[in-house]
Image (tube, rainbow, N blue to C red):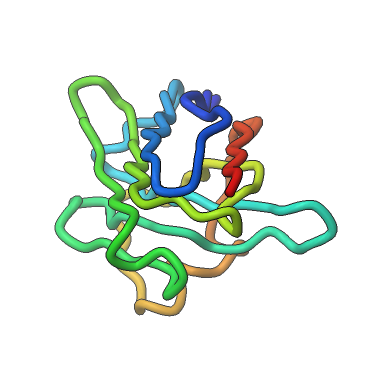
Length: 129
């Protein structure tokens, strides 16, 4: 399984970016997918997740209302649309995938790093004020 994240960059506060995570070796139509981020000196934290069916999405409180996770099963790609970016959003963003197929969890489980078996290489997002 390989997850290739792209779309990061350096932007101004208030701008938007869309991250993409192209998966190979795994069909995202059957798997939970998530985005996490890690800022310098901090632990990796949950950002967003989407259920295997795509019918449910979950967000960290810090990004709720500004970020949107979605997936395109035909392209086997997960997206993270990030609007109204803030300097505190600066981090390396990682996409992740759950190995188990067609499995549903409690809301809290989607936010745990332990759920995800596969991780992408990360893409840097830098937001300046």
